[in-house]
Image (cartoon, rainbow, N blue to C red; front, side, top):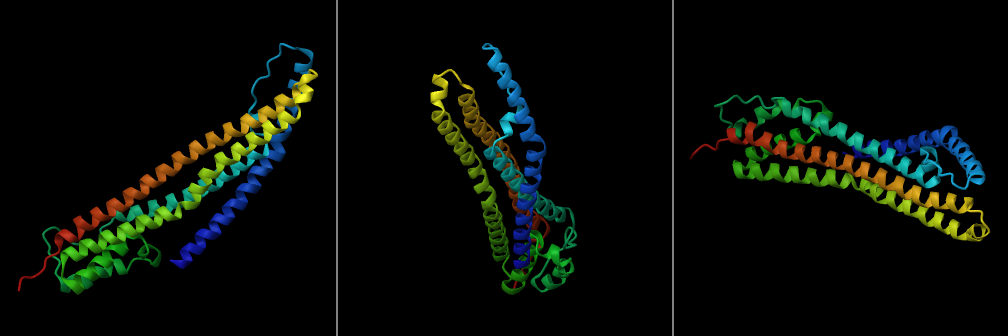
Length: 267
């Protein structure tokens, strides 16, 4: 388990560094040069034509540092969600396999628990740490020691609830990112409005280019941050849905493939 946590931490750090390098390279090579070119063209046309209405350019909308930071955080969070989704889908694949090999009509007695546990124990070490094998082995071990079907059901329920809490906790970083992205957008808004107020004297003298550029920073940063945040929350919700289904389907699998076959011999 500790090795898995270490691997997760290494993956998250590597994903963040990769996202920073990738996004910044695109900004330096494409977005900011294109935005400067579009801005110069619009300023020239606006100075020569008072009725000119500049068109919204995607490069100008994305060019500022706040938008770059939001996109970096989105890609980082998306990478974390992708890793969690891949692991969850790998765990779900076990639900399509017959791990206990209990045929219909066959009863499982407490003294048989060890024999039925052997196919699960024979799984690769990585798969043994998945939720379903852990729940099955814990249930069989509990049945062997207590000879109580109710204790087995309680044990499996506790393991599934603990796993649900663990998966919920591991998404704390993604939730923090989803909160941080709009906050960064609002910081861009404050910066843009503050800069625009500092250039108000230019607008009084008839030069409104600086003010409009600063206001563009203010509103574009918030716009991008909110759009990115909405997309991230949607993807996060889909991951949580898949994880919740995994926990519920694991409990159902244990009920249908193990607990219903258990039988305590009458004295």
